[in-house]
Image 1: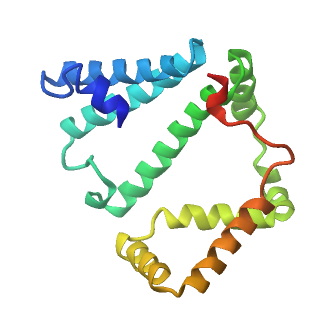
Image 2 (image 1 turned 90 degrees about the horizontal axis):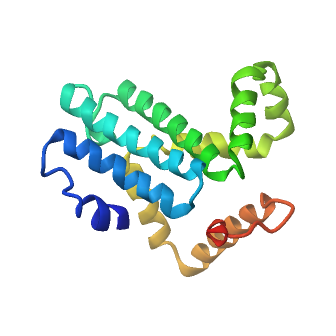
Length: 191
């Protein structure tokens, strides 16, 4: 929201035509990337997100019956496709964001695109059953209707305090079980 309020809107937002809107989106995200660090990978991270936002806006304008501002307005199969595309674009961005150098980015992308072995998928499932189940549950929850989400929230908030405390304790226990071996520093300490 800070990028939107103080950069995008200050640059003119979407009030000065489509071309300027796309340029404002790109510039806002490029500056957001630069804010994270003066490294090529952060600038590329911002450029990727700016380009994705600009392409989405352009597609919404060019094909208003197909591309919508939110998933609730789209047909289910288009929504699923949109989630998959968005997920993969964001994951590509995380490679740029988390790598310690452009060499590491290149190595990760090389491994993804040239050393991919789908036959080890079942080994992953068998070796990490709990993690795999949580991943599937988390992925499915993204497609849960808003009414079901609101219903679950109502169940939790109407539960007695003791039941809420037990749910919180279980959530904390699960998080602790999946923590990594070492303490990970807060990501923004590096900036």
